[in-house]
Length: 461
Image 1 (cartoon, rainbow, N blue to C red):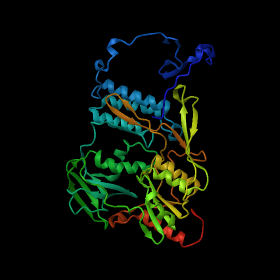
Image 2: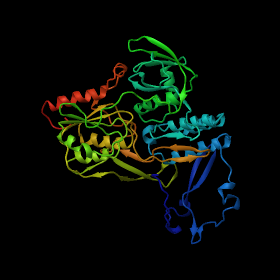
Image 3: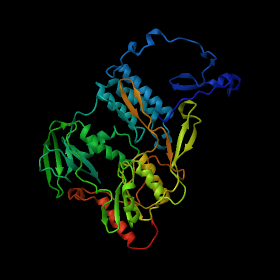
Image 4: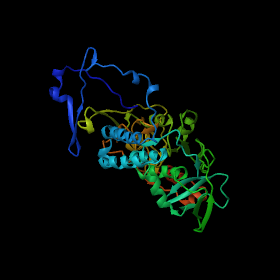
């Protein structure tokens, strides 16, 4: 948890504004206002007035069991969640959402939700209006129990098959693009699931939508899906939904870290990697290195930065809000970040980083350093544009909510949220490339690195 509550004790005569300074009056609309205490009065015996916990509330066993099948529980959940973000979400100055209008819309949907799943989607739609890549709502009992038997990926405007379960007929091939699902064009299906996806950039929204269309989009069983083959021919197939856990993962595999993709050009997959040590001799000897950060790195991500810098370096600017008044008034910010020192051996090879819309949070902390210190080419597409500590909390009925509680600015103080790290060499995979088993982003990186080690110039040029 990023946030914590601390108690500051001051004498009443030292309180700014005296007794009046202990309250804030807020206009609630329609002629209604409230007087909110921002200071609690206490003596040596505790807060005033002194009281005791009622016996009925002393044990959780006696408390009511809250469920989203109850209308009042649903309304309370919306009000609580909206209030948390109203006071603590740090990016309203960037996302420009109409947060005041979001409350009555969510309350109306919550009041009419026929079941717990409909309420889950109502909460997700509310969170999506934060445009926060960390934003999500889940419930342990409401996971998808059946899926379309496909793995999908966006390739430009095409939603392309990149993996399939054993139940899918051979006529459906890797690289086929989905034209429609149950008679609805793919673009319309994407629009339906997008309203439940909180994202600061289209890259993160599209990456998550490719999974939401498989798991969350309501289809018939079997679903009637129209595909477009690489040669343009249509194919209509009825695909039965399959149980959760059935293999339908992408078939494209990345090279093993340490693979020499061209003379002098070494590949290293940072996605999940915890250390560079076993391959450090290869990295030191390489003329060019391609680091793959299309995903989420392990400890090797920050470790690598220390082998690339030649002097002290910092991360982007991490800003924790200090909030004492309602509605984000008079917010103060405590700023921090990584302070990195160089570590031997220093990697002197030409460098390229692969990234795309699935790189979020810690991955963007790494890519932000790469961008600021110009360690090399950034190849692929823009990152998720969401960084900062995740703040989870629970709403009545067992719903778990996550969101971003810390503001992150780029090294120069400019906006990162919704901007992300842009590529210096943009590359978008194509349906044709996927159909033929090619990794076009990696291929472009090899081409760029071969050109660099074939000519003069400094690293990153």
